[in-house]
Structure formats: structure tokens, C-alpha cells
Length: 157
Picture 1 (cartoon, rainbow, N blue to C red):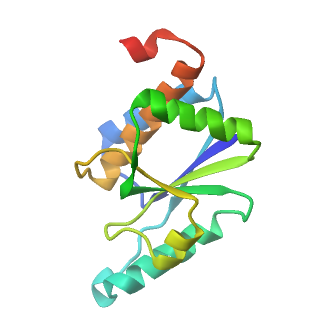
Picture 2: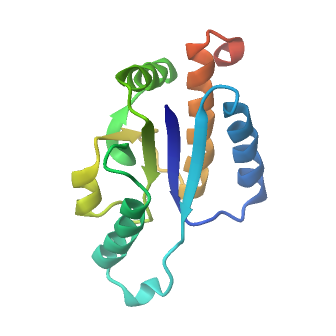
């Protein structure tokens, strides 16, 4: 199985880029992991919120296959502790799907089309985080899940 993370826009924050890279490289020892960065929309002041979500949704749809399982990182999604999240990853690995896709939406969330296409929603916390921070938190949690599944000591640090 491969895990794909779809992100909205690049980050310029060095500490996030560096941290993300550290965990992304660590993940290569456990699972195939890919990051897709869809371009941030330009001239958003001229677009309604709904139109922004629609355009971002179209970019997400272009990067997924019908056979992919899509889970949205969404404030209204199901929350897991780290062990529960590792159980979710194991369940998906056991299911035989080829690509488990997680998507981070834009500043206003996802379009209705994306919500309809999604197979689930995941919340990292009841707190609100910047879209930049979410990418770092998420990749660290995927790494943590892999170490839990391999019964390695990282989770107990």
C-alpha cells in the first residue's frame, strides 16, 4: 500500500520544510509515501469562497484515482489517539487497497464534490492548526503509526 498526502500550496517556512523532510525520509523505511502539492489559487479576492473550494476540489480530483481511498483531514472528522490511528493504517493495509490518500483542504475546507467523493474524515485535534503545521503533524503521526505497528520504541519516547 502507498500513502499519499495531498497538500494545498507550498510552504516557505524552513522549520516546517525541514521537519517534514525528516519524517518523510524516515517513512521510506516502512511504507511508500508520496506528497502531492496542488498549487495555491491566485487572485482569490476575485473568487467567492464556494468557487475557491470548487477550484481546489477540481485540483484534488485530478490527482486521485477512482480506486484510491480518500480521507479528508477535516475539523469535523473522527479523532484518534496514536495507537488508534496506527490501527486504522493497519486495517487499510489489510484491506488490499493500493493507495490511501489523505487530503488537506484550503483555508475554507473542501467542496461538496470532495466531501461526496471522500471515504472518511480525520481530525488531528479539536484545536485549529495552520495548514502549514498540519502537514508536519500529520507526517509525524504516520511515522509514529508505522513504529507502533512494528513495535518499535519511538512511540514511548
